[in-house]
Length: 350
Ligand code: 5GP
Image (tube, rainbow, N blue to C red; front, side, top):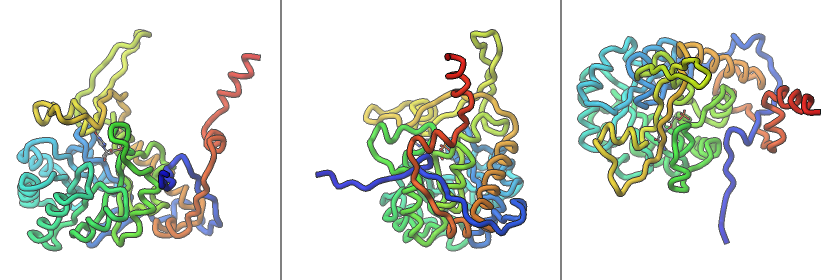
């Protein structure tokens, strides 16, 4: 007999409205503090090579969030990227494991970085523990250490015990991720957050955010921050070339590349080739260019502020305390997405 538990994600639930005593959604506070670091918006740009370079890090940190620079380049290039950031206390850099990760951390901390993200696909592992411990021993409390990714309380607790200040949660929810269909592993994101929130550390919900509502639900379920990859892809501030492609109707569409860091393409670019014993756990796509990232971040924040007032939450902690989730059916989900055109279409057929 299979012994299973149920896992829920964003589309499985809605938040139930509650009494609101807040005059305007302008009056809610969306800030998050961790130690001496403070962010006025709980948004983080993903450390993917088609999302966060210097420009994205500057754009999101200047709006009050955090940018995490990707690590898919030489240490020297990473240092150059970091030297271009305007708000060093709001920009982190990601590192891999072991000696090469620690060397990257050393070079970047020398350049003034104090937020380091130890980031691998499966963070509940001995090597991540070793790297986090080593950073803590070397830099003591002078470093804000983010570690992940995990999707269970056991994983989050393990990284907290190793010395992580913030735990990054999310296995297999990403928009260009194929881990779940390649390996069968993962935890639906809301259930992952609800499990991980039992650990006494701030959480980053990483992966699967497609609408502002997903961010509200992630925060309500226990995340202190949400990390965005696909939502920010194709914006002016992402690294990468703009490529014009001619469409069948003669119009030109401008696109940019967006790819999973475990895609074949990314692995071939950074390691020369993908080993035969591996399978890609991500895909690579072209996305339409979408203009300045600020528009997307402001829309996201508009949804978060509004969402907070639907249950009278003045702060994100308040949102977490007051949130009441309701599990919904596919009909409930359909009802909540624009459907006027479906109805008109049926009308025309008659
Ligand atoms: P998104 O916001 O696009 O839904 O998710 C972004 C997150 O997907 C990243 O921050 C990272 O955790 C995850 N991710 C990025 N590339 C890959 C990949 O190739 N494979 C997997 N499994 N996850 C990825």
